[in-house]
Length: 116
Image (tube, rainbow, N blue to C red; front, top):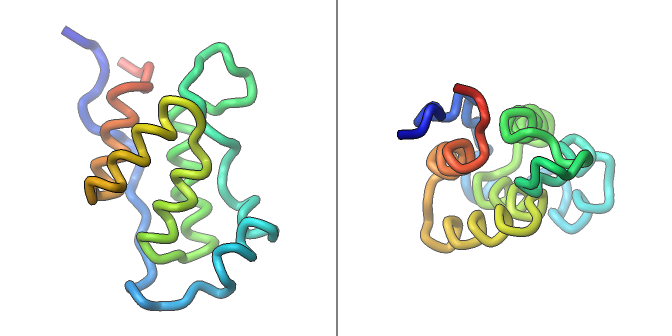
């Protein structure tokens, strides 16, 4: 039996209404300071010194969303692009399966959380 918590303690962000245009085209977000509002890429590799812990990553995603106020679909795209390796493949599959952001957070936390 795992000692990991079953639910992610990080809040799921609010999203702009579907169809609402973000302040700039998402391609421009990648090139701008807005993209920097989100955390460093999450690799899931505990040996990777550049990759934040899952909690710090999800907290950073929450705060980045507060700044950018993206739609849920645009947020999922940034979430996907901020993950590398296995987490990237998992998030891509979950997005394709139309899994909610809250459930994606919980699944990532269950897999990569180290807090008891």
